[in-house]
Length: 430
Image 1 (cartoon, rainbow, N blue to C red):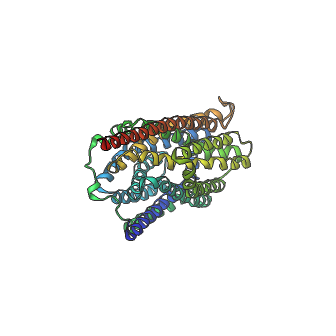
Image 2 (cartoon, helix red, strand yellow):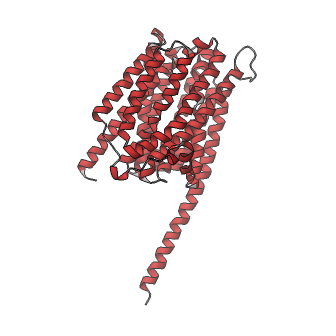
Image 3 (spheres, rainbow, N blue to C red):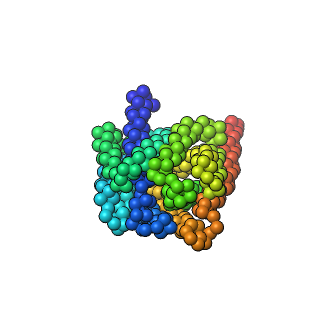
């Protein structure tokens, strides 16, 4: 790689990270106040838990259908226009939710957000375009760190603005998404060369067609299941955390925002600083398993925490979760061609969306059944404990898939060495 090419690659990575961070800041701003706004319309904390889960599921449903389309469109027309259109769409959506006079408006807003947020598939495809395979785990860790930086600033700002008005964070989010669009319009370069683009096909762009790609290699299929379990357990946090913290610890938007900022700082440190170092020592597969196992311990501690300080300390082991996602993404990108990176990310988002449809509905109902005057479940942290078991299952499956893949690599390497030795003997025979 020439010095000029290396410089352009670094600039492209910087551009996409800043754009992604601005989008996440805008999304993070509304987290501390959206459940409270739902509770205002719903009338009770228990009802808000179920409705909040349903809205998150709606967001994921829209992502399920739109992510493969957006990923395939970026394979055909390039990454830049897709990212820009999605960013300006998010800005319009936040304006809609800021003006929402009823729950129906919030429903419409979450549906639109599910479509426009599908640009994250293109962000990961963009990074695959400008990063060699052996460096993608570290690169995806940088994306995770940018997302985490956004979640540091976003919830804190949202919590402070939420003290003024539950609508103020939505206006701020609209402004930030607009700034992200203008920034990307001015500086974001295209990453996918014309010769690497793929013809658009509805057979690949529909979610079920995109999922077929995940069956092209059995390790890819196993990793897709790990991806599903990871996202399923992760959705316990947006589904019930704000309502749980308000009920159990008396936290308001400011406390929620500060805790989410702490989560973001820890995640940023793990993904930005630790991923590359741990991968050098343990490899992608080993790092993924450590991350999943550490996350399961952390989320179990959340469910068992007797007070606010214990819950906060649970964020420390939970932060190891940040080791899993970039290495999982890296392993999957190494099993498809360069022209299929957008399709792969669309398929991954479809898997995540299926988890996002089922998980919030499930955890919302679990939460509703564990609180109130006559709870069916005996522990208010039951949702977190179930999520910990799901993540532990993901760690176990990841270990099985990794072990099988390692055996296959050893056999393939041995076969190649045997073939080379045979060829050498043939060449030297009289």
